Image 1 (cartoon, rainbow, N blue to C red):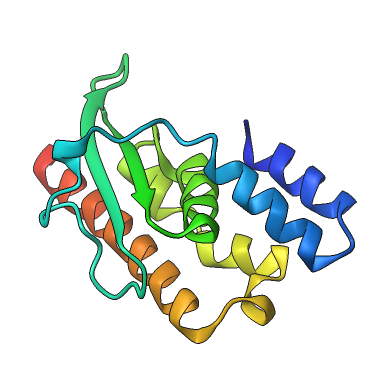
Image 2 (cartoon, helix red, strand yellow; image 1 turned 90 degrees about the horizontal axis):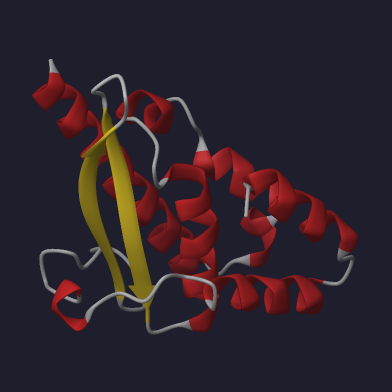
Length: 142
């Protein structure tokens, strides 16, 4: 699924209850995260729920690093937010990640008005974790 498909599906849903159900459904599409990946190293700090992001670095044909992620949470809505985030970021180069404003996309969807402050803080923590990984990978590749 692409971010444009998510955007189109979201636009079809007028009611926020339906949108939340859709986000929960997106969370169910996440690839399973192996139990060893649920480690303290992969745990995202700053989230009210338990959130894990594990990173793997591959290379594209040009030899640039590609950051690939698995994500999980013990909260259904948060799993959906992770699914949207990974649609934006997983499998991308560090430059693509740093050039993508995920928070603007979530604002476009209307999440700023519909997430609790704790969930908004957690979302920012997840975005910053991925952007930090991208900055590290970019520095290592130079």
